[in-house]
Length: 129
Image (tube, rainbow, N blue to C red; front, top):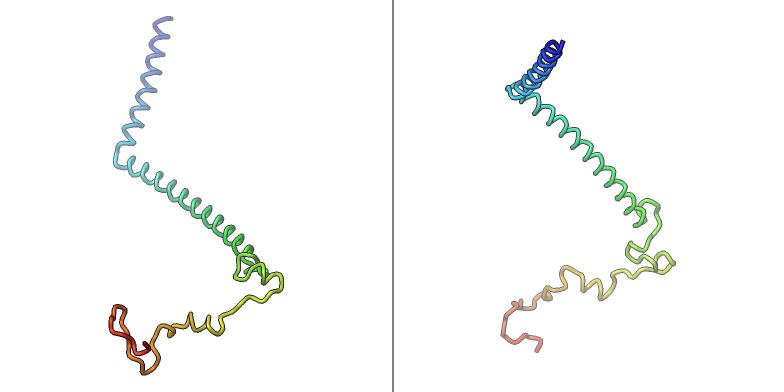
């Protein structure tokens, strides 16, 4: 009876070891490697799609918060927009007029028509002096 027990135990362990080794060997064949790579790439693609969905969701919620803070969706003026608190209180925000318009004019730094052009490091006296 003892011998039968040890023979059955040895046969069972031998079959289990053989199955494990044949599975490991199958994974090392070209088909096994291709299957492993395919499964890994499939999982990577799924993870990237999930990541992109999370990024889009966070981006849209952040954009909505920024638009609400800037008052772009509601039509109201918030403190983040130009003239924020004053405009919200009914005050008129200053606009470019007069000297301010001349200062920001693209032609403000050009000489008047007919005046000689002066260069940056010109040491000649100007006609105005």
